[in-house]
Image 1 (tube, helix red, strand yellow):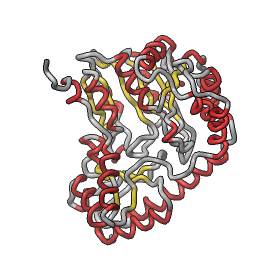
Image 2 (tube, rainbow, N blue to C red; image 1 turned 180 degrees about the horizontal axis):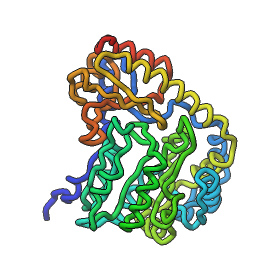
Image 3 (cartoon, rainbow, N blue to C red; image 1 turned 180 degrees about the vertical axis):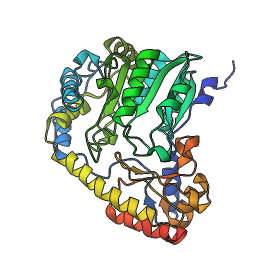
Image 4 (cartoon, one colour; image 1 turned 90 degrees about the horizontal axis):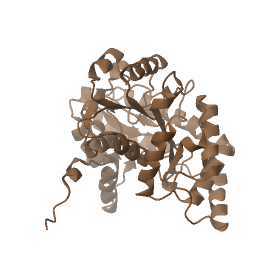
Length: 389
């Protein structure tokens, strides 16, 4: 019997942020001081009322199996929250609660994509999109997000990428890594094309509450889109609950049922005490999340101004999420070279833009989900390396 791994494992990628974190930790173990701007994790504690709700659920014995799709209380809270935030009415039967938001990507792509199917995805974009498309046997078709388009894309160019084999389009707004937000008129155009060409949409809206101006727009709210869109959302970012592992899908019942079958075959269900904490997150006070967004905005303004003062660097101001994605083309360095030098020479851990796809070349990603003190320290160190304009 062969002991070789299945060939599909060669198509599975990874998330570079954790690799860079490990390298940075190794340098710290050698005594080097590192400013961590590589990990996309809020530096705030989970709000106390949410922690207390989780503790209360543990004390009440909510430590056993629950329905695979989620407890009724949380599914109802999710549809009520989405109706208020997005203006879209769903039934609780159209909700799947998952241990984190990544499983939504896995389940939807595994449920839909076969050999020969094409999936359009943003590039630069969250690396697990491409990884999962390829793992499922699909063809990954990158949609370039260009700085001159404020990290959006041209609708005419997008349409040219569509073929009869296009099965799914992945959207992410606000975006990781760019912080860009897709404009309503672009979403309108994509929606019309989705109806015309009959493809599915995975709308990754995990950062929809980390928005600095205006109101979030979901493509699922547009005509003809509710029945062909799965919304991905979760609690990690806005409620600082990364370690709780709690996310969800909102979508057509028939597809959500199939995604639930995949959960039955993998995770079984999501921990019930985390789900009760999620109920409190959605239905309890929202002052702490609102304060977090205000703090992120202050940090955004500081880091963007500091980056734009560096020689060879230019940075657009992100409209959402908590990432800066500056161009470093003026330095003459490639993305990986720049990230390596920043880590080893300046003691600043960032990610190369190529961690998010080939179209990220010429950029680096910095997470400003860190204290103002550390952001200032990082900018001082970067100035020593790059110089000022």
